Image (cartoon, rainbow, N blue to C red; front, side, top):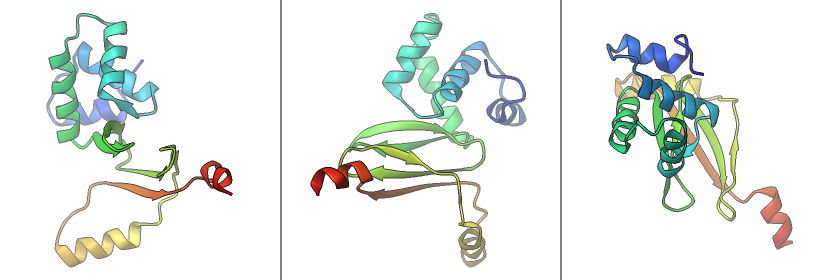
Length: 144
């Protein structure tokens, strides 16, 4: 279960929002699916866990988490929106353009670029989502 010390719960609390049971349930589901979930998948899991949480509460919570920078969206597979927790402020994928497999990677060598962009444009960058597109090894083997 999501703890009071999870980064998302701390961010909600620091922003002055209540830590409600529906928000904790939604955060717990997001955390246990590694932060990658479609709206339909999330709704089904929320319904299975607590049928008293309505669709409107789920979408209001998603909107709030996006507004606070806790959750980001990514369009994958053409038009499917995935929600991703970003407690560390960044997230990285390589997405196969053939089978739509998502490969996550942690190493991020963007600190120099981020510092340059902040200086050049006078902004403070708070996070990033890096998506690279290509053909995965499995799909390349099928074509050979």
